[in-house]
Image (cartoon, rainbow, N blue to C red; front, side, top):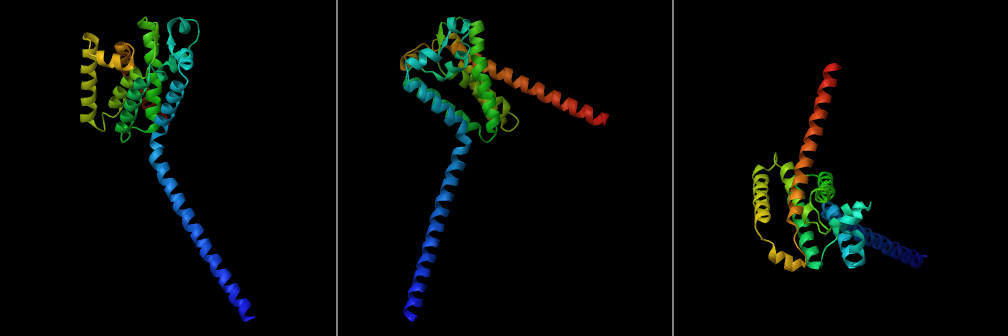
Length: 236
């Protein structure tokens, strides 16, 4: 009986130790995964865009032919190209440049603008930028995210003005100078060679204009909401 009791005590001790090790390892893994999720969470939007762009580039040239902006195709009813053209790129250099810009802009404004606001701004610039090009510039075809990125940067600066005036003003001034240089002088020759395509400076301008349109629409909506809120409060 004593031997059996001793063996049972040892077995129960081993089981307790095993349970503790299991719990501690699970807790460590769980805390580590939570930490990784907290780091990645602010970048969900950027990662999704980057993944889509990478998939498009891996499947080139078939994907590019299907998704890029093509004047005749869009005029013929293939309106999805207005959106998807932004995620197509002329080569891998073009893709890396644009995704690097996207990540840097998004990271810069994370402390000032929520992820929902950043997604809304970026999405608006993606669509409006190419619509402006389609209606005012006769381009036979267009690919790239740079137009939307100019809008994203400009719009983010406008939206963060109340929180970081120096940063917002500095960015708006730099973007303004860059656009002025691009529209009047050939300053993108080296970039054209790198991406093996002409740089469409008008896309950068239309992207910035898209951001200004978004900003004023947002301000008008906010004004109307505040007006009706005050009106109904007085009425009640």
